[in-house]
Image (cartoon, rainbow, N blue to C red; front, top):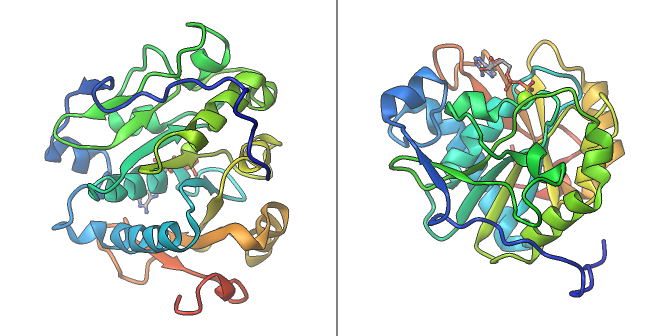
Length: 264
Ligand SMILES: Nc1ncnc2c1ncn2[C@@H]1O[C@H](COP(=O)(O)OP(=O)(O)O)[C@@H](O)[C@H]1O
Ligand SMILES: [Mg+2]
C-alpha cells in the first residue's frame, strides 16, 4: 500500500472539541451492553485484554486503523467494535474513534443511542461539501463515534468512491495519536469489507462460538491476508470468562500465532 501524494484532497477529522455530546451514564452503558468503559466491571475484562493486544501492535507495528470483520452476519462485530473502542478510549495517550462502515446495517448508533444528524453515509453521498462526518462523544467519556444510519444504498460504490478514499486518507494523515476502529460488514456478504480493508492496517475477525466454522475463519484470513491479522475473537463464549451471557474470549487460532508467539 503506497502513501497517497500530498496533493490529494484531505478533509479535517473532527476533534473532541468539535464532537457533539450526547447524554450518557454508567447505567445507560450497561443497559446497552457496553462494558468497555468500566474497568471495574468484570465484563470488561476480555475487552481490556484485546485493548492490550491492539496497543502492543500499535507500538510494534504502528497499526492504528483496524477493521472488525466476520464471515457471517450477527456474530457480534458491532458489539465488539463498541466495547473494544470503549476500552481503548480509556488510554489518554490516544484519541480513539469508532467508525461505522457497515453502511447497510449500521448499528453503532443504536448501541450508543445516537440519532445522527450527519452520519458517514451523508458524507459519502456528498452532502455538506468537503466536511468530514460529524463525530459524537458520550457525556463523561473520551470515545469519539462516527455513526451511520442503516439504509438501502449502493454501499459498494460509496465505499469505493473518491469521498471514501479521501476520508480514509485523511484519517491516515491525521495525528499519530488517533486510533480508528472500523465496524465493517461480513467479508462474504459483498465487496464492502475488502474494499475498505485495502486502506486499513489490520483487522480482527469475530467468530461466534458454535456458529462460525474454522473454515470460514480461514477463508476470511486468506481473503484479507494473514500478515495483518490482529486476532480472532471468539464471541458468546460459554467458557466462563465473563458472566451473564456476555462471554468473550480473544483467542488466536492455531496457525495464526506468528503475529505474536506469546498469544494464547
Ligand atoms: N457476547 C454477547 N452476549 C450477548 N449478546 C451479544 C453478544 N455479542 C453480541 N450480542 C448481541 O447480538 C446481536 C448481534 O450483535 P451485533 O454486534 O449487532 O452483530 P454484527 O455486528 O456482527 O451483525 C446484538 O443484539 C448484540 O447486542
Ligand atoms: Mg454490525
